[in-house]
Length: 389
Image (cartoon, rainbow, N blue to C red; front, side, top):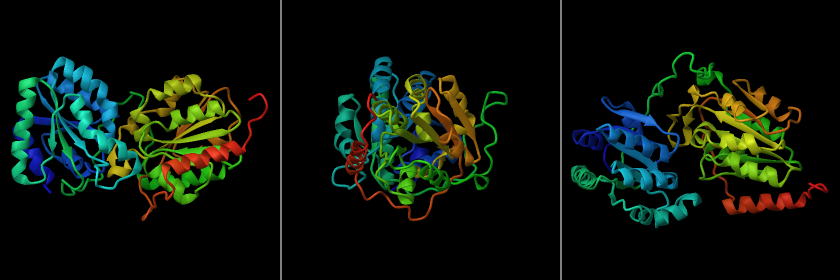
């Protein structure tokens, strides 16, 4: 195990001053250090492909950049890695975590990517090595990366295993810069203590989504785990992986089953990752689809790194994309207003700002993802659609 400072200092000595990426729990101490280090720039990217493009731009400007991502995010990064960095010879150093590494038990969503991570990198002609776990190995690892980048003009990857970097705390005041005044940034994001909790918001959802007529899809991370802890019902599904896809999953289900009210509970980090989904949802979303975004301004399940959500009016985005109802605010009664609103000719949306914080000893679902899916499908099969629908 090494200290994050050891790697960062050695990297800085070789010209790496720019960092970008998407958090992963394996990366938490590393990102926390970079966020608070002097003379470094860190940009919180909405998705891994965006991060690769940002680093390519840094390279284009004469700098050296590090892109940090979970291996599940390699899927998001394939296009820019193969058609931007490879084509234009714009190298960058990738730090890729190895979730689901064979022989190391992990969550089910990481199993397949864990098996194929090395092959994915090799297929994209990206050489890789283990992220150094001892101080003496840091310099040689970076020298090998720089030599490849300089000689080929292409990326090099260091694959990080669990526990490689020692823990490093994150101060509460470390946040992305605010949007300029008048830019349309959302207002009223008060201190976390003044906002409702995720549990309070989910309790309102449960109370207003009867098992016989509705389905609740919960986003990746703590959202699904808290919903499960609050009430494990057959009309619920808890996303794992597939960050940013919950509302699109809800769209397909709502279109296939117009007799069922589908409620997709999203998160700010997930929504930012796939903002293009708002246009698709606004165009094709049916009246039986409700999209609720619980926004705590943080990637909480990976250590609490801030998102850029305080600078975004999600309701403004939803309205511009065609949602007939688009609300946002701090009052948890917003959930009631959303779920009890009169029928519209399209999907309904609300963004509720909530505080950070998660109950201690929050359990993980004991039902597996395939079991949850089959249970929901059986539950829906018992509800026969109305004739002609």
